[in-house]
Image (spheres, rainbow, N blue to C red):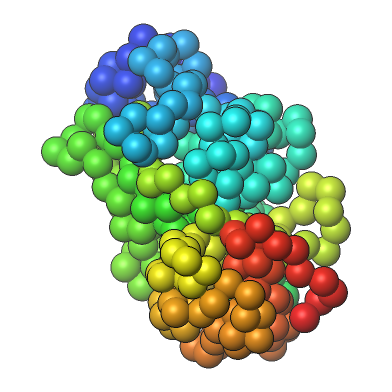
Length: 331
């Protein structure tokens, strides 16, 4: 592993200056450092400066309600989100998603900012033996190789699935990332990530020197998450869905639906959302029919067609959970 310096700035603004410092070839920002350390071990990242945010105050690790919106500091851990009474009450989809991620040990260290900005877990990208498209090569090996866990939406040219659990939940809750260090002060979570055809080497649109300080999102009390995994303990989801509903007088007035683990970005499902609008909360057949629409535009590869059905199941269950109900069986 290449030697590197460590800086511990006292503010996000100071961290932004260090990240943009031309003295260093590759300054990298870290908080919990879960994915950064993995990348360094795998030879994907050789920073000459690690900017550690652990000593920053400025509300970096606090959760609060401000002006009717939830505010979460960039340094808040997944464990804090999963157990926060404020998040559980006002945005249950976010608490449920955080509780499903990784293991208790990882959730105690991993931060919301790190979860949003982690790199893909595609085995071709992570293994040094493969000079894949995302690393600057000429081939996405998933197209002809083992693609059981890869994308069914997006169309390539790289077929990663977005690794963040929390991003889809924040999308349905109208999440916004707040920044320092650049011309922008905020960006909607829905616009934070880009598809591979707009730049295969990166996943987000942050510029060098921009630092995420905190996240805000709307209160979404009628919201739910469902993730389907091969095993319940420390496993990446095969497909998951986040649903936010606005319900009045027993009728769904509007909905937001976003899928994860099925596309290179958090994948919004507007057709499902439109189909849910106007449905009575007790009309399970209509909710199920809306959920089936989630797979309409899917383009699975050889080994991952099963994700189409799983996504429909996840959307159905997440919608029922948002209504305070639980589904029975895999349907």
